Image (cartoon, rainbow, N blue to C red; front, side, top):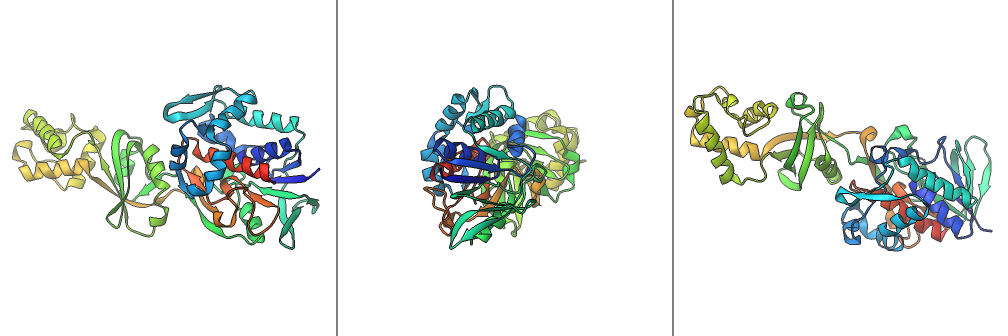
Amino acid sequence: MAKVIVIGGGAAGMMAAIIAARNGKEVTVLEQNEKLGKKLFITGKGRCNFTNACDLEDLFGNVVSNPKFLYSAFYTFSNDMVMDFFEELGMPYKVERGNRAFPTSDHSSDVIKALEKEMRRLGVLICLNTKVKSLIIDKNICKGIELANKKEKLYADSVIITTGGVSYPRTGACKDGYTFAKQAGHTIVAPSPSLVPMELADDCCKDLMGISLKNVSAAIYADNKKIYSDFGEMLFTHFGVSGPIIIKASAYIQKYLQKNLSLTIDLKPALDDKQLDERILKDFQLFQNKQLKNALDKLLLRALIPVVIDKSGLDGDKKINELTKEERKILGHTIKNLPFVITGLRGWDEAIVTKGGVSVKEVDPGTMESKLTGGLYFAGEVLDLDALTGGFNLQIAWSTGYLAGLSA
């Protein structure tokens, strides 16, 4: 019976182990943590958004890095197949807003239990607290691995690396997978945190901390050129901004971090410039004798008023009946283009996923096998693949893990 070793017991690793075992292989999973699926356990705030029930076109559209590489993986094991797979394992699911699929129980532990139960049923050997030191490679063929603590060697016909990325280091995430890949001659695309909040230079963020904005438009500029825009919700924090549209935007701005980055927020996207001016004029007619700083309560959240006035350069103490038409236009422009300076992204502790990893140019997309070292396979976040939030990163893990397990 052919032997397969899987390094890493996360989403991709468990899927690879199950499929390889179903294919008649003798499978051993080596996991350095005390339990399987440690990162899987905390995904979706502990609810585990395990895939997205969108169509395949949208699946590819939500992959940020190297979507074309996933053609075979997604068509071999699609999101519909993932949902069927878990249902067959006795885990019912539900689909919520944005086509996000969750276990009906809302417990990520049910996803892990379903996978563990199937592995045990198939006779997969699971070794916890087991750290791998290196690969055993002979004449460009991977023959097995050497363990770190016991200095023991385990031989196999195939080795699948599913060690994940380096986001959420508290779950035991580390760079071991990259080290093994380099040993096999692979190129590593520099890993960086993705799907993270943004840090802003503006002092006003501390005053706005906790303020949530709904139905706003945000645009990111690099050296004054628009590189990204979106509509939705965001949140001010003590260091800058977070929330769905900011987290999503972070996936696209990594390569622009050396440029002058700025964020503009349109607080009234439903109104064009003319409509907003008419609305401001209407409010001003009600508050003619008030100071500007006390005349915007109907239009803006109170906490935002001093920020908008400050960034507009207008005098907040000036009375409404003293404001010129030009000053009113400046106010409207600021409301629709509230500017902030982006200084960077938050770090690994807050990153949902890793951007970068093993270069997909050196991996066969139809099998997940290394093009450089025979018998060596990769799956999941260790590869230079990342997607947006909504279950898409886990879909990458399931699909690539499935393909690696099928091919190993």
